[in-house]
Image 1 (cartoon, rainbow, N blue to C red):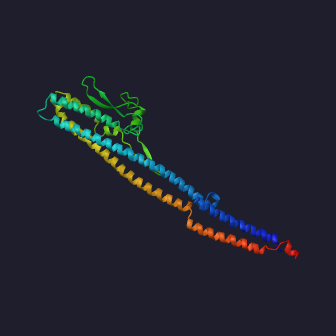
Image 2 (spheres, rainbow, N blue to C red):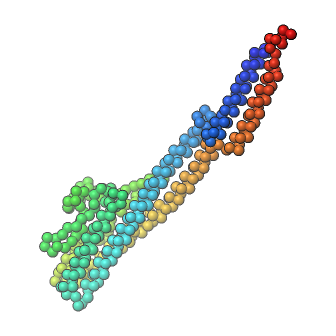
Image 3 (tube, rainbow, N blue to C red):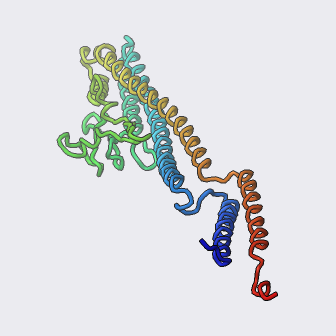
Length: 320
């Protein structure tokens, strides 16, 4: 096969253009700090990079969900602590009512104090966080409880209320179901957690706290010795059950808080690992690229020098 000067020139031009393209690629990588700017540079790396970006974005959302749940649980725990203290105060009043020297006047004073505590408890159950009522189930835009005042005795009682503030709440209605609903958050891929406590869980444990509080103020209002004896007998025992229920719920909230703290730490570690892997795939190793650039530059210059020697003949050379 006859090799012409043109064939040699074309071959050298192709090789030099390839060398120049490689130099340009290394230069772009060094200036951008990234190993690739389009899929053709590294198809496998681009696919892995996209997967990691998706995972990191999802992880950031999980982190937001975890932080929101932690804040919600903190507010819930504080409110439950208040309710526990309020029940403790009512318990103290029941023990005080057992004082043999107490008469109608003293019991009325105790009743007024208990009525005040009941009103405060309803306010605590209406705790609001970030524009949402913590104990309202999935019906977060409406207060869960309100105070009903007896027209004759003026005694307070807690009951569930409709979203518009009217009472009573229909047990067969949708709002009642929503009040008992559970809020959920995805804290990692495929892991969904229920994190709220409802007013119904607080008020309807082993005893119906609504009915119990109503009975207590009525017994404090009564002159009947049998009714009065219930204050430091039956009522006191039921208050202890209500307190145990609140303590049990607080323990569950505490366990969820611990779980969320562990999930947050795991999320942070996972995000760090994925970011590090992504950096290894995408980001340029400058020391390596500088060496690679120097080698390619030497190859390019060498090819130019070689072509200048081999492709020297011109028409004038043949006319000599």
